[in-house]
Length: 99
Image (cartoon, rainbow, N blue to C red; front, side, top):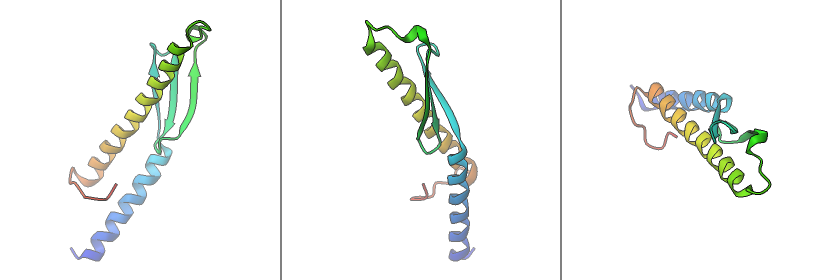
């Protein structure tokens, strides 16, 4: 395979991956689902949902911790999805600098 053709294929795979990740939506949760964070594949926080039971004016720190945990879980899920998609597209082959 010539290098130009290979580079074109890599660029097509990269464009397809970017489109797929932009459309991806994942949800992270904490506190048994009392706090949920929805994130896009580009790690943009889209929504945070908080159950009324999680709101305690005397324990704001707990709610803050739950929000952080839910957002971090969503970000981890985005990373896992990205790695899974890259592996599927490249057949497990590592391409340095691709993503």
